[in-house]
Amino acid sequence: MSAPQLPRVGIAGLGLMGRALASRLLQAGFEVRGLDVRVPPELPSGLVWVDTLADLAAHSEVLLLAVFDTTQVEDLLTGPQGLLTVSTARPPVICTSTCDPERIAALGQRCEAAGLPFLELPFSGTSLQVARGEGVGLIGGDPALAERLAGVLGAVCPKREHVGRCGDANRTKLAVNLVLGLHRAALAEGLVFGRSLGLDPARLLHTLQNSAAASSVMKVKGSLMVERRYEPPQSRVDQSLKDFTLIQELGLRQGQALPLASLYIELLASCAARGEAHLDNAIIQEAIARCEARP
Image 1: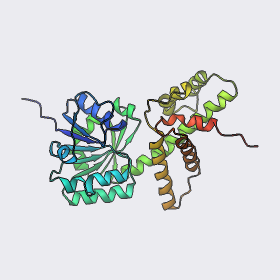
Image 2: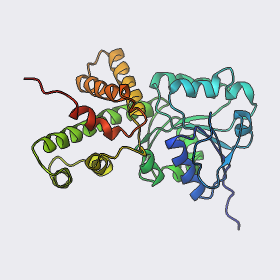
Image 3: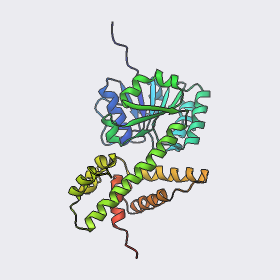
Image 4: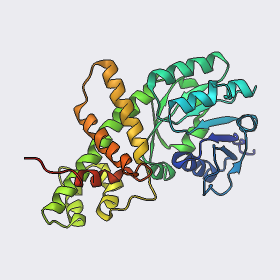
């Protein structure tokens, strides 16, 4: 008996995360097509480039979205040139972008009403971690649809959790990102502090990793901070700033103050203002180092 044929997969958005997803799928034997507003400088070997969204949908049995924000996701699906307008094809959609939970839940309902199955799958982890199969996929939506798409989901995220209805995955992702970002800032400040005291940063990082302060952030971002190496990025400043701005907005809607998140946004914004938005978010340590001491 021959093995079941793998579904053809399309990816809209070939930035850091889109290329990581494409690499995972191609390694697993899937036929993958991709689309972006511009051709990236490097495409995963074996990926087939297409020129239009209609062409991508027509040749895909599953469609992954890996664009920057909620507005781009909405435009791709329900905008004037979106999938529901330009194509009659209705492949199941898996949205991996980090989005506004309320808007993504409403979008999911609209897609389902139009016969377009929709699942959200934001990731916890950098693009490099996702490419290695180490990222955690957070699934929101119909469990039956998730089971139907288990082959694709298993290829892109061996580690995954179904966390609830559509919208809940992005709520969870933003809560995770809040803690993760603050861990990153704490590590950066600790290394900056250690340098100011004359400590060797590599030795300090090793000690931190074996101390009560240890966290997974040290493994992912520690060497980047020690070496002050911020490109090529695994996760960019502008992406983190977008996510934390959304976290802050959601906190305001709920009447919940997030004082540490607000400070983190200020540090990221200072990096962006210096032309560092495209660099790895480990560069937040430089923003901390640039802060002047106040008595």
